[in-house]
Structures are given as structure tokens and as C-alpha cells.
Image (tube, rainbow, N blue to C red; front, side, top):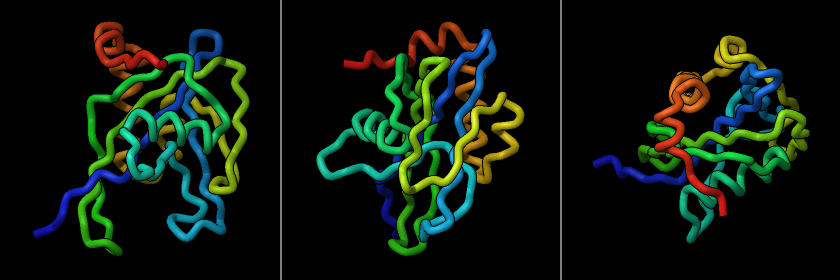
Length: 156
């Protein structure tokens, strides 16, 4: 039997500049042991005792220095097989809207960042699950009024 766990969260960050959505993509540092140099959305590991929302907000701040002005639970889970632990990791996905002028302050985990329109952000991302996350955020959060309303999480 292959164990199912949930140790990772993902956060798709976007902002509006002149009514146009831009998505944040991050390039992993070349010194990272896992996927060096790869472009991705925010991913982070759950700390003991944390819940998914807490982890997502913490990782957003740790990896970019930003705090969201609005925040959502995205109606999808991504998954991957962890070959080291030999288990399947199910990852909740969140969306965060930040202010148009928000500055990205990268952690040591990343070497570069870019704010890109939807098609370009999608092309830059390596993993299909990250592309799907951007697809769903664009359709249901950025352009989906009813879904965005129903999925929003009030930030304490």
C-alpha cells in the first residue's frame, strides 16, 4: 500500500496592474537540492501543528516577503509521488491577491521572480499541476465572480 500524506501547500499569487492580471512565478536557486533552477508557483512544507491556510500564508511571506490583500482556497488538489519517502503527497492550492505595487523579497530558496500575464506565466511553469493551478485561479478566482466569492477566505 502506498501511504497518502499532505505535507505541501501551493500558492498562486496574482496582482492587477491597470485591470490586467499578472501572475508571480519564482525560479528556484541553483543551489537547491530539489529542482534547481526550475520556475514554479510558491510551494512550501507544512510545519508540525500547522493547518493548510497557516502554512500557505507563512510560505507566501517567507518566500516573497508579501502579505495578501485577499486570499482563497482553490478548488483543486495537486499530487505527486515522493520517491524518497515512497508516498503520495496531496497538496491543497491557495490563491493570494497582492497589491499592484507589492515588492517581491526573495528568500534564499529562489534566485529570480517575474510578474507575467496568464499565457506567459503558464508557459514558464514546468509542472503540469502548476499550470493547472494558474488555469483554475484565472478562470474561477480572477474572472469568476461567483466562485471567487464562495471560495474566499477572510484573513484574520
